Image (cartoon, rainbow, N blue to C red; front, side, top):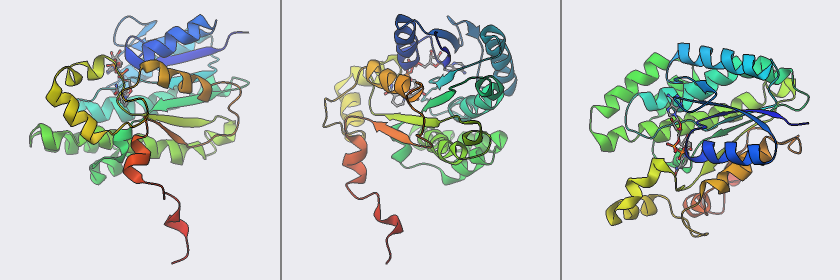
Length: 266
Ligand code: NAI
């Protein structure tokens, strides 16, 4: 029996690759994207999220077995926090009734190794508090200071999303309904998002300095798609709130070998 998946960002990059592999395996996919998708919607605003969820639920026949949220942008603009954080979390809230109706519901989102980079704590806290207007205002203030400071918007959106995954995954709304919620944090993936940046030696040098990938260097979208598919498979019954750094070793290079001593006695 095929499972019904909702995949956001299904028209390009990681979302398109995930959609293709799922369909090749005989699963049913309802894609959500700005264009070239079963549900054409803009996830940057509250109305678009409500409409996208309603249409996806209608197409699914009210039962959704898994949601894989890939849609996102990396530009140093306020829309980045709206799409990357609220376009995932609010949409998931709207889709939850469909997941609750499934025998084996699963959720996986795409964060980033950028969640480890410098970010705006204030913006992360505003997002986690559900205050989109405030988060966007902070993003606008940062963006107004030029692209270097504006870049903070992207890591902030991915840090907030990673923290939302951890805190939500153990609540009655998600764990209580038997829904594993997890995330993937890619390194540098070869998709349209990174194409321009990686097309010059200077761009590549900048990216590689920030994202060290000692294992196999830049990754194809398939490397992320396969993990998203496992996280949302029936086999994944007990993983909750994990952000899997599938990043060629960037996390291990940057954070080192000891991420456990935080709770050791002094
Ligand atoms: P991509 O640009 O190839 O695909 C993103 C998709 O999201 C596009 O089809 C786009 O139309 C859709 N989208 C953007 N704004 C939208 C909106 N307002 N409403 C609906 N759909 C919208 O990018 P890629 O590389 O596949 O990225 C997928 C996810 O992976 C993003 O969340 C990105 O931040 C994340 N990521 C990507 C990395 C990379 O190196 N490419 C590294 C780490 C994370």
